[in-house]
Length: 329
Image (cartoon, rainbow, N blue to C red):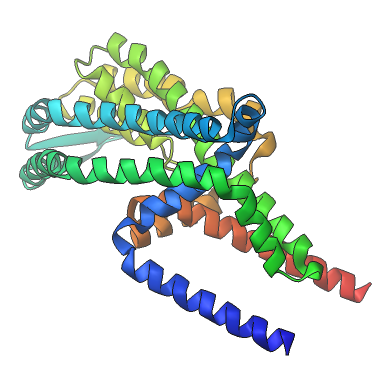
């Protein structure tokens, strides 16, 4: 009977969770984002709580997180919006076609149909960004309120989860919790620090290479650090191809070598080994699958949810393998 009652209660929980997800669909991404950030910032909250009252510790941690999210987001939105005219001029200045020649072979690339499409996309992006600002403000407020509440109640929530799980499965919950913590650390802390370092390195590099919009390029390179495997190489390759298209082969080589080494390559070996002790050690190919599948399925929140789901799947495979090994022994 106790197990039957537990099954009924669990079914009620699952049903209400599905109903809440359906009703709160528009802000579900914000809720997931706040929950994962609270999970990562729980140690910061506990450290502050040892010095100040819990309310002030939660408020300070939530404010710190909101500023950390708001400042780079507003900076990037401002750059994209204010520099949209420059981007349109840059795309409009591209030649309608250019010829690549190597080892006696030539290949002509026709850009006449691509240029109007890019111009329309840039203008549409600027309008969409301006239109989305009020909704983003509401979601940021919701993020702060949720983060504050989750930090205040995270210990009770953890205790409730453990109380609902039979004792013999606590090791499974513990393993999944550790994998979640390590994965979120890798996504937020490691990727964010690497992105900031990339942007800071890219500013003087693109300025020295003579680009007027070096701040925008640096910001885009920093954001692209969240894109696994390719990352800022997309920007470097695009700039190099542009140099080739206007006949500046030496400039293309300079961009490819200098920006490729300092912006696309250097931040990874410089930052990651120093912060990788607490990462989930998820292979790059699986991280890419999670990132791509998550963002195509869930939108922006998929950047976090996709790799996290893949990491938990990998951990569950490890747990199954360990169970089978124990059974055979």
